[in-house]
Length: 399
Ligand code: ADP
Ligand code: MG
Image (cartoon, rainbow, N blue to C red; front, side, top):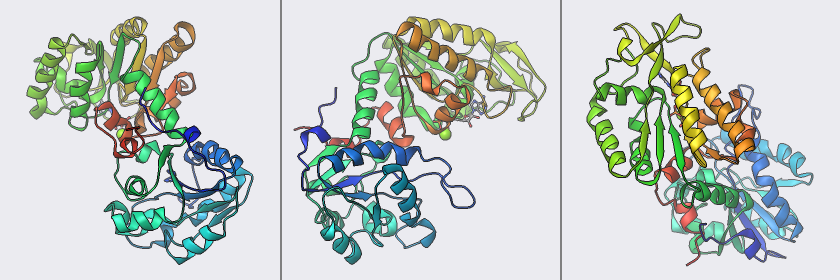
């Protein structure tokens, strides 16, 4: 386990807790919230603090206002939904660390909640300016980081502030850290990672780190094409980064040295058009025509993956196995996800997944609820898998 300070270690009674949350929720065309998962994720920590008698100040970024006040990116619209979720009123400060914040923070009573305006309305946030971090810190007595999804950034409200206040992990952050460290740092082996998605180039560090740590690595999706091409297969007009073929071979070599078994597709689904329901066929690796592209893994590959899932005690998944947004090229992803979900309940498999498209794909497969843990983070989850130190997590570690 990562040894970090938790909410349980804090003594917030009568104190003011500054809580970093991630309220960067998706909104639809009419400006209303299309998915309130991120608001819900913050509720347990807020409630725990309220019950412990703390005054609660919430800080979050939203969108990319680039250091300017942009009314369209004001956090004011979250006041009502948050009030409803919490079942108690949430106040709103029209600035982040300015006069309104100071007045409202000073007037807070135990159990009351104040949401500050978008932290990114000033460049000092993303610059991790010490003066700004101090201004925020002066509003309270302790810092609670509850936004794992923002922990790969060293910003004033998420990292700099900890220079001036004792820092603790909120409940949502602690849940992420516990599950992710269980899956990658102290896993039950054998450990299998499934890495798919579009391109090798976005996941080089990830692949390089994983092959040194795991027993099996299944590579799928568009990125598998680069590995297949590197082995001399003709991938037609598939998405393929030909310039990265040498790197693919290097990764395979590193895997061999580290005793990590690499699983690549053994059969593929090909089509001439990148479109839903495009006419398609399943074929062997040496049967892809020049005008065809690989859009999914074949049945044999899914069987091979199921065998690997059977052998694994821990599964880490990032990246879909095919162009899952288009039927029927979602088949391999859906089947493998459902199979993994079944192994969790039937065989005690520990299955952890993260990544924007991956989580969407697992929901699409109806398998998300069956997984042991789904990370709320995209970028931070990837950096964790890459073995990088996350600034927002480092500040929570016990020295
Ligand atoms: P995540 O967001 O979970 O990290 P990525 O963004 O890396 O995942 O990859 C997801 C994308 O990869 C999806 O849009 C999917 O359509 C695409 N993809 C997967 N397989 C293929 C393929 N064979 N050809 C083209 N695109 C693919
Ligand atoms: Mg993505």
